[in-house]
Image 1 (cartoon, rainbow, N blue to C red):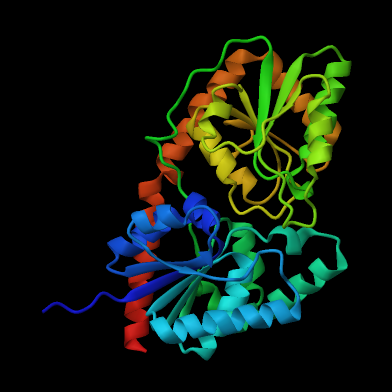
Image 2: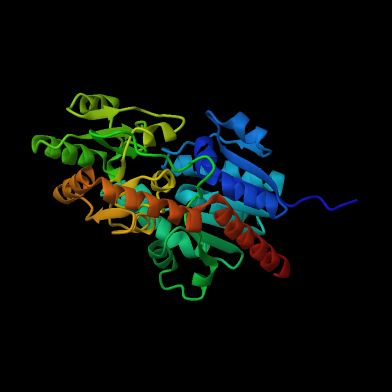
Length: 384
């Protein structure tokens, strides 16, 4: 009789985030020989996760609950799950899961821990006092919870690797760069530009301040006043769980401005890229490697984006993108104007972006790198 497969549990705050961002890594874990389960708050994707062959453990925690009592409650719930299921490895996705799950894993004596920090996000970039405090506490706990001998950390760019490693020279070897979430190149196929004029720039993502949708509105309206008919499509939902989210009244108000459409959430973002010639992201920071730009590049869309860590890895200035300083509306408008008026440049950038995704970011590439990390950590844990 063969040995039972070792268990690996993915800990994620929301089931939709696992489905949209971590499916290739979970499949890599299966390829590495693990029995894979997902622990998350379940809202809309539970049946999909089960149908894909993963055990599902619903959790009561919520992404927006950050206080001491809510955190302690979550740690206890995760600890009980780990004690009951006895996983060989756990994979914590994003900072909240890494911190709270890291404490639970240490208490439950889980043999191996993987944490992915896909950008420092809201707590790393917000000016809010509570967010700054949470960020300071998180950074103080990184050596204990993320960089122990039986731990590995995945980041998506070199800047984040340096931040997390800090002065921990020895522990830095436990940090791996795996570039992004992967993109399914059979699903996100190269597509021709829609007819123009007019030219449309699209942003796909959550409508939160750090992603810069308000800056996009300002830049697009500036171009409209100059007589340049660039349209702007905002494709994504409000995010009430995020303190910096724009409310629906604001988003509806934007959609009443000349040339702006707010689509809300779309299940298939290819329908947005089919209507737009340019992908734009005016993020102010905190990115890992933006999935929206990976998908846009795979579909063959020229990019305008801010020159920040993570984003500049997939949006390469002069290759497939124009990069501008974060928060600079005038530069953002100027870059959009250039691509609006230069179809040949858009087409060159489209071809280059597709090649980048094929070489560096396709699902099989990410899966192979992740599987290798799991196998190496398994060997190290068994030797310990």
